[in-house]
Amino acid sequence: AAAGVRTVAVVADVMPELFPQWFDPGARAKFLGWLDAHLRHSAHFACISACTERDLLAHAARVGAAVEGRTSLLQLGADFAGSVGSRGSVESAGSAGSREPGGWRDLLVVSTIEPRKHQDLAIDVYDRLRDSHPDLRLRLVGKEGWLVDDLVTRITGHRDAGTRVLWEQDLDDAALAARYDAAFLSLVPSRYEGYGAPVVESLARGLPAVVSTGGALPEAASGVAQLVDPDDVDGWVEAVARHLDDPAHHEAAQARAAKWTPPRWADT
Image (tube, rainbow, N blue to C red; front, side, top):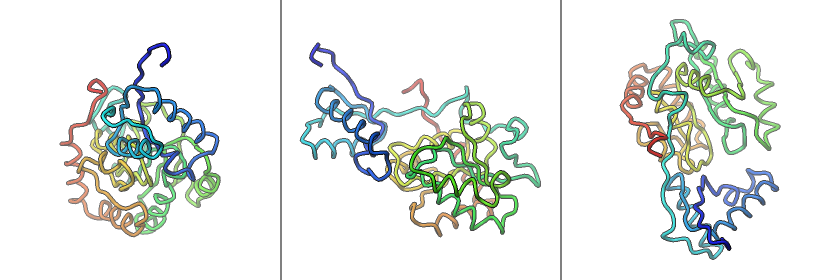
């Protein structure tokens, strides 16, 4: 800034400031230092959702930084692995959980294992439905994050770990695309998000989703995915059970996703 360079900061979220209990104190301190420096010196702020833009403006007002008129929305793309909107065949999906007669119906959760992602809720839903739906599996895709020792123990020590409760880390784009294509239903139970990429990626590949109302997730749902409060366990169980038990309901959700036009990185 002293040399006359003008910068634009891309802001994904300000959650370390809003929800310190979900973050490592050291990481939060670094984030707040970064944010403070940009609030003082950056010319413009590109926010990845309207929710993040509101959160940034509110934080700036609290700390006395004037950024009104210097923000804009930056729509992220959803295409990866060379394709969007194509439900792959069960053969191409390999071990992802094929949906042939007698096969598995996978509930897919894509996110880092961390407190605000709320994978506990997905496990609760699975536990409530496993006995009545013997073809049901829960597939968690994401690396281990922070402050999650108890959750990791719950996942790895689950009675169905490795058989009907699966946890995969470090998948490349092609493998992740296969998981989306072979899944029965996407679950996004996060307590708060600055955007919600797994929602957009699911819908982009024609996969119905049940999504939390936290943060920017209703924006990502685009009126296509079903929204349920992250604290309403009964509501989540009911929503998932209806997809499992009512083929017409599930097919209608698939049709809505198939008609939705996803954002592309070229447009970004």
